[in-house]
View 1 (tube, rainbow, N blue to C red):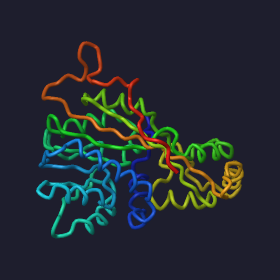
View 2: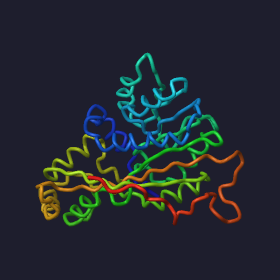
View 3: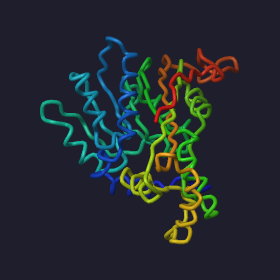
Length: 295
């Protein structure tokens, strides 16, 4: 059975985008800021080991090292050039470790991490329950997972426009919020709480949107993608299909659904399910959606 994502393509795309990522990733920085606020759930606790999964150029890693100067803070990313950029954030006065590895196979010991932070990395993972099981493995009992991912309605306009121009998928599939919560429960995490935001970014035209996606490494990494150039005809057809969405201000809209989650690792030996029911104090039907859409 083939994988949904071409892992080598993901690695290459983010490696190429390492130098341009931070300047272009305005939305990612805003989401990181909101996700960092979730660390307030730790209150006065001082973690010993903090892991930033999918750290990119390390700005969030540096923020956590500043927050917890005595902790061992680790930046982990699939693309080595991203970690080269992250080194610039790890000054001699607040250094942090850098590890090139896959989120699906964390090279850390069991029960060794107090906090896992992961901002907009998990959309490149097709088997979320397996990845969350790996997160649970390395977290200490009572450890905190704080993460975000892009949701189902992300780039819905772009997906629709290319669907009218081509039968081949041009936009990655994104998870539903309930699926994300299910994956946390399947891995045995306790007390998950999920939120989401809807952002609308605007662009002068379709090429401007595509240039930004390339600058942040978010190119089409699906295994079933077309492996030849899209071609002028298909691109023109997609542009024409997108054009009716142009707003009164002359800009084309692009939707980005962001899912946030935090959850706790269970006590040692805790079963993933108890008496046939998911281990959680909040049912998925009652997931709070507290934030409002923002342009």
